[in-house]
Image (cartoon, rainbow, N blue to C red; front, side):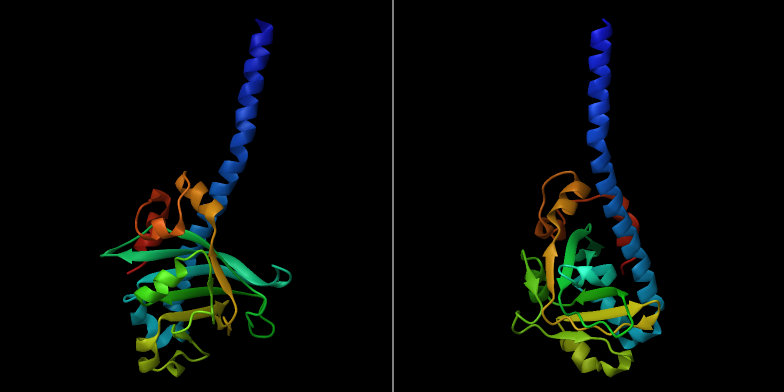
Length: 222
């Protein structure tokens, strides 16, 4: 009898220990979703976003990287995790998790990290980002506009013709960013853990998965 109790207790402990990594992973993902929500607030209040604000309402999808870090990532380059959401009719999909990395983002001198929001304005840009790997500069025909120290520098003509519009800020200051050569890839392990099953970023962006914990982030988008 005592042996059975001991074995049962050990089994419970084993299950508990197995659950810890899953809980930790879910916490990491939810933290990223919550940080993305805060980044959207910063974007809306940043005067440098200027005449591109209305573009947020026209975007086909949005990729939000709350903390793009300079150095210490992929052999000393830059990178960070982010979430992408696509517009489906009048609603937004749940977040698909992505990793952004580069050896030469070119953040302004003295800036070690930045918040980045990429507005995906066209279907062809969204389809390119849905692939297993997207590399800036390798996708011929995609027009990328990076907002400068004054958003007015990006003319209405340039914004209207853009496939992707990039906004970057470091503690409320213009961050400056060069995306040439940077790579964007789905983070499959995060997607699987957050939705409780193996699922691709493309499926998530087609509205085939939902997590109620991301509701506040979806509501923050117009």
